[in-house]
Image (cartoon, rainbow, N blue to C red; front, top):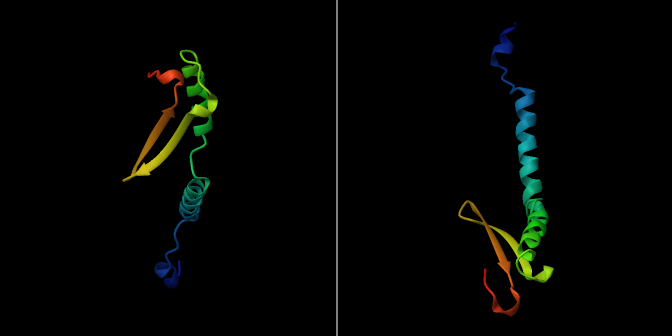
Length: 85
């Protein structure tokens, strides 16, 4: 081991690659605008609501918002005839 090797400090390659991957994944998620599960969640909620009330599929809105470091899931359903759940 040479004297210069003592002064060289290179970070482990695996840790650098892992951190870069985290940054890339975070950027991809923010660029998409929303999680992948929202369309599936909307479809499943619509199926459950239809068991009790006949609603138009366009009457169900699912939104995900980020507020103060928290994610807020908002579900809005326009029920026919003024009925409320």
